[in-house]
Amino acid sequence: MPSIRPIFGPLVRRGTGLFLHSYRITRKRKNAIRGMDLIAKVYQNSLGTEDQKAVSYILPPSITAKRVSTI
Image (cartoon, rainbow, N blue to C red; front, side):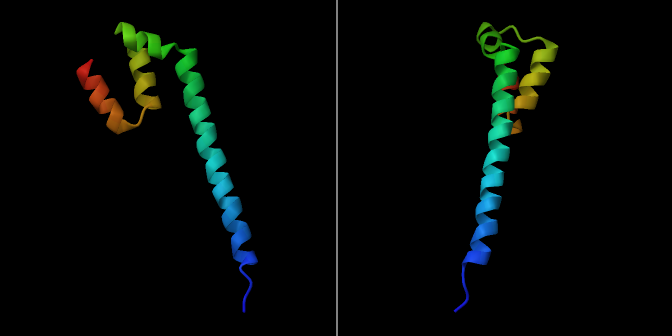
C-alpha cells in the first residue's frame, strides 16, 4: 500500500503558502485604507479623484461598481 505522506507534504506547504499570500494582500489593503483615511472620507462623502482610484484598486470590482455608481 503506497504511503500518503509524499503527497500530503506538498499539499500542506501549498495551502500554507496560499494562506500567507492572501494574508499579506489583506494586510496591505488594510494599511492603505488606514493610511489614506478612506473610511472617514467615504462617510463624509468627500472622495477626491486620487481617493476614488485607491478605493477602486483596493475593493473588488463587483463592490466598486456598486459603490461608485451610488456616490
